[in-house]
Length: 468
Image (cartoon, rainbow, N blue to C red; front, side, top):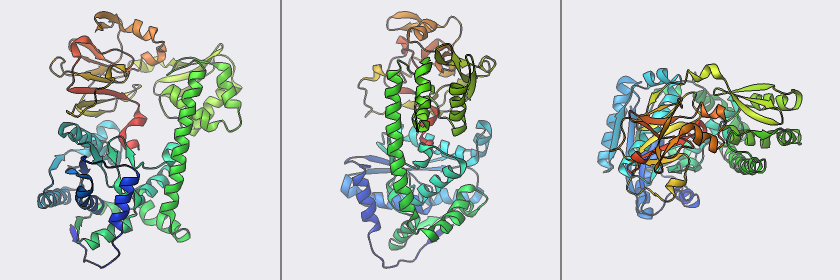
């Protein structure tokens, strides 16, 4: 139900702090069009109210999106009606969608919270692309950041997990990340803002709620400024992650290697033997394999390199193993799994592809899209919806060939010329239609498909927006 908090005369610094944070982090620019994820809860209502006030500072145009997950019956319908009424009163365009999250979670083999998060970002990206929004705003607060860091810590996390929630990732911005939930409530009181409450947020059977209502309050008895402390820690960890990623790319280049290409065994062993090698080695393996590894996986690879003899191997998942082969450290496919990679028809938005080396975004291009240097990217393709059929994904097939760059090209030869390991070739998603190949990672775009109204982007699972 909607709650109206009585007005209280308090200090009026919350908005100023958020405005200063937006300027400091360069979250907003003059003339931005901003799409807000609006649930109807206190955080998103407060953020929408603040963005309206910021219109005079940044000449913003605003829109909102509400996604009904179909899980809470009449309560969800009430939240939807509340958002419609609010946006109508404030003259904000609202995009409303309803989805069966429970069925989506079942189909994808993930939890309800994860499925809801994935769909939320998928719809935000679709609407942002179609309507030309330059920014997508979510109402994550400093308290959400603390909860996320502790969740990752409890489950076991590396640098990326402890880095928590970033203030910005591409077009996604989080202006409230500088204030805790107490300040959100204070602002709501000051401005007589009504909002909705989700009763499931009180259910401590869910880990996040248990952290919010039990663990964090207990920890704050020892350190009332815990939110600030965790934010500072995450900033340091994030900078460290950036540094190790940069050094890993350098090291990979120095070894003469690339994405999933064989590496000189002696140099890889030297890296693992060096003092303090865990984080540098983990960063290099992530760049090499194109996937994150757990602590146990990194340790397993270390044992393989330093204790095993020739031809020993270690399964890192995603249908590949790593192995020692003579003087090289290389990737080897797990052949029985190859047949299990399913053909998948692409839908607009984000398409997770279990088992494949990449997932795929299928997006409509806005008129403001920057098309500079697009032909130089291995993982982004601009195509014409008029010249292709219904796109789907499959792995390579014997005899695959198509016309690109004015010549008929064989997929097998392209991969060989680019020195793509055989193990990788069998997990690369190739986008096709009923006429044949359109594009793929390391493959050029088919001549017949060139255009500027659709964008196909191949990304690793770690680059999915909800991972940040």
